[in-house]
Length: 160
Image (tube, rainbow, N blue to C red; front, side, top):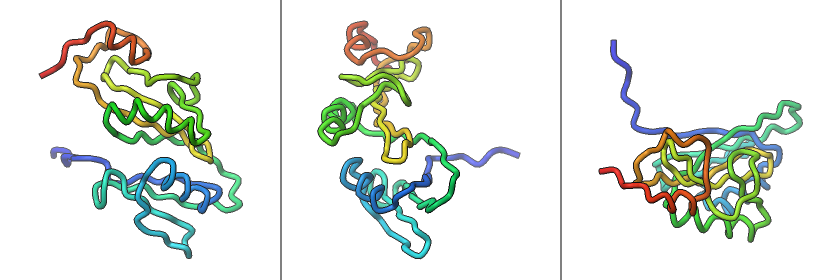
């Protein structure tokens, strides 16, 4: 029996401690479109990448002592990943290299993919990321991440 072919991830969900604060954060800072709220279930849903393409659900944990730190990456263009550093700072959010990594002044590149990335935290400490796949050839021989300027300096050939 063969596996079902997957064409993408449609939805993901996070728990949050203050639903109204998180709605404002994901709408006004991250820039997602609020799709629907279900007040009786303390939930909100956002469109990612346009209506009916992908969805993020937020669920209020109320007084639950359970707290998880989860990660979600939002795909965007390289120009937007570069611009995100200033946008995040303007909103009082620290742009980082990797989940919990050092503060950065420019995106980092993961050479094995390759992709440019900027991480940041939501109000509940969830690790969020803006990421753009690059048209360059992957370099799995380069360990870790490097600043975008360093990646550009090594002059990677494009694929295809």
